Image 1 (cartoon, rainbow, N blue to C red):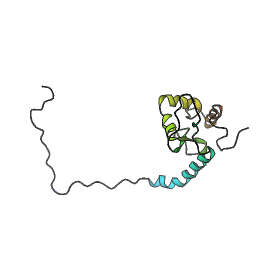
Image 2: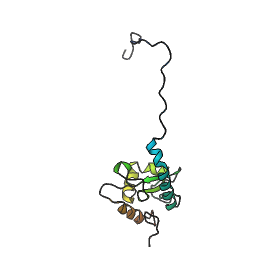
Image 3: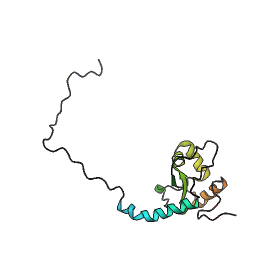
Image 4: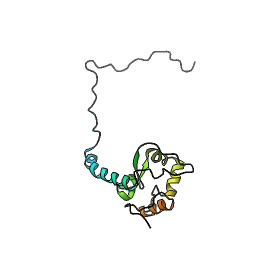
Length: 147
């Protein structure tokens, strides 16, 4: 009893005869707008990686921070959805594992404390000051060493 079916399932709409349904064309992998922005974004990305020494900012962290894994990626301090631009001051270098880890509950708390996530009312300058206080950087957002 219960889930037994007494009558077999039947099709209520007839199948069309002829050719099988066609799929539409493939979506463009990159929009025209994004393709036009690519050279400028690649240049900024290269500047961010060079400024950060081509290494993850969290590479040497201890105390519950996972070890590095994966390729390097630019991390937005202020998210794009919060009008954070693709600029040198708004990006830092993280590995893929750390970038994903910052989305977890524990990682998000660490990110807010260390300045890796900028919330409303906090400026990018404040975030860079927190990054310096926590020993993640020894330079300003342009790459100039601090005294």
